[in-house]
Image (cartoon, rainbow, N blue to C red; front, side, top):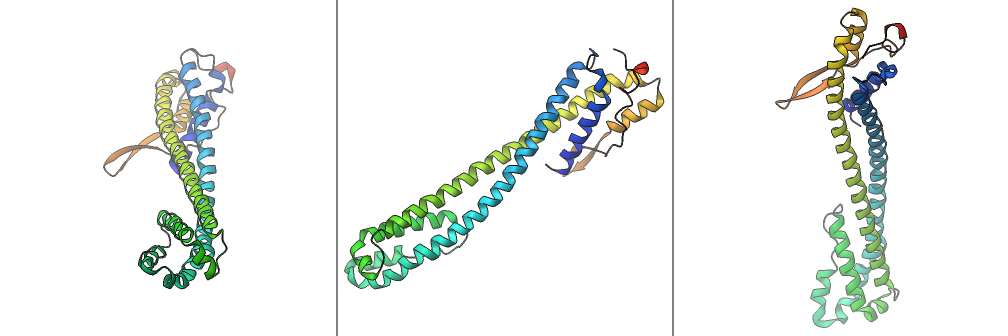
Length: 242
């Protein structure tokens, strides 16, 4: 959750606390209920976003380890063995040399997966020659299995990252909706407090939203409020009337 969104959520909670005794007030009951839902959804999105961010980072490490293992433990032995196989495949040597090339970029996971399957196919095609060169008979199957597992890791990380981005978008949507609800509540509550300067000042402090220009676009932000969340609801003798 970004810093601005954290401030929004903090403000929404303060507003809810300030109006905690006003849930039966017909004038503000509906927007206050909506604000409750926004707070819950933002909290859920924030937890999901953080969890998936940590998981995708862990998947990135796991994918890196799997890529190194695939290169070092499977593709490299196959490439070294192929040098012995070249003289035995006659006219197929040129094609085999072309296949038995490592991807040039170490971080290109897609290219590595494709190369691994190509290696596996070639080892399988010349199984007898590679067996004579010293590779186990099931080596092509080992390469293919590791390549499939590698691709599955990449796909899983992609799905987790998509879910994380959905949570990020959800936070943005809920933040905007929450700001709109707070503005509505402000329009409804402020007239009730005009006769009480202290409480009105406290309410304005709690709901203060200002705009800053970012890239030529006005973006609603807020100043960090410092409030005592008992001012409106704490004294029943001075409760906001409907």
